[in-house]
Length: 162
Image: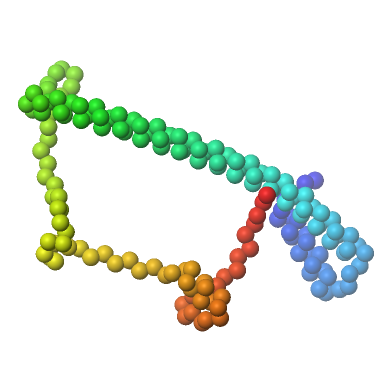
């Protein structure tokens, strides 16, 4: 019977608990060796699955990039076609084209264009301030022995599969 990673961990923990309450018997040593071997085999199998999923993610990302590029090409073509119709209608001073199948016309809208922001009164300006911690500076300070209130250096163990 194949064991799950959870079962292997549980068995190993039971063996470790037995070791803390007693002595290392040949049976416990054998069980410990088997648990470690099962963990190794299961971890290798997990790693192959992880690598396969990473490869699939790379393929998906490449397809997303391809589709984004295709979308951009279509959007550019759409804009060119709209501009061609607009320019032609303006050249011929036509405000509306109406057929049984389609209607094309101009819709009026208003927008504000700011030519020189420095000339505007303060009442027409919005101020946005964003404050973020400088994590690189904090890390460097902590590594140099400085006490940084409100921050700490955390050591992470990140799994690496090659």
